[in-house]
Length: 334
Ligand code: A3P
Image (cartoon, rainbow, N blue to C red):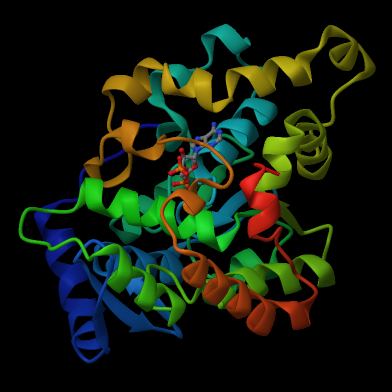
């Protein structure tokens, strides 16, 4: 997809409009030493606050839209690759997919990072259908047109322990020179208080979880660990949900297995777009693929840190019926 640069005039206008509001918001320091704004009940990173406001004000969902939602470091990159490949399989052979050259973040843009003016949102009307977008917005902050239209939402989440470590590592890798990466202990403490990008994680998770239980035809809720355990099953589930089911012939030909292979961590690590390209906000695309393992957090966190998050999960999420495999099972990469 071609992206247009924002003109100076547009950028200036955008700044003036949002500046007043933003300067009165409470702030905190995020894991990478970046600024977080408390905005509409969640911690919005400074780098996406303007984009988030523009998204809320100017994005008009279409009934065929597919919105891939997540809190950072939960498997967004993987979900983008899978959804794009499933939906576009009749347009491109697996070998010739633009996914390899443009990368998952190139073929599925983020609504709060990749568009920086009202005009750019209007131009999205011209895109081929179904349009596929990514977002880290909490459910409650999504524009009404997304929630009220027939647009479908797929949410991917991950055990918060692994999500935290992935986020802490990532924020250290991408921080700017003038930003101080927080120590593991400080970052963890903030995480447990809900102070991290798009957090608190429990609100993010429970918002989409609730929506998926109330409107299962509209919101599909996936877990990274389940996808790792049986990716083919989830590829089929995703295709059915998105309205692009596999035919009997496709199943017999092993297309789901092929998609699983093409979008696996090991394959994606070797895409040209991943090795040398850039992702959203100019971040090196390689930063979005680190280890791709379940349970890596246990290599970094002490048992008492693990226990603290497990208590939080029980306290904040159990009531909604949402659970995660606990540390003993994580240890086995379940
Ligand atoms: P790790 O840091 O634990 O390796 P996001 O895409 O939401 O930013 O999440 C990034 C996490 O997903 C990273 O986790 C990354 O390695 C992992 N990931 C990216 N692509 C993947 C894939 N195709 N399969 C499995 N995990 C993947």
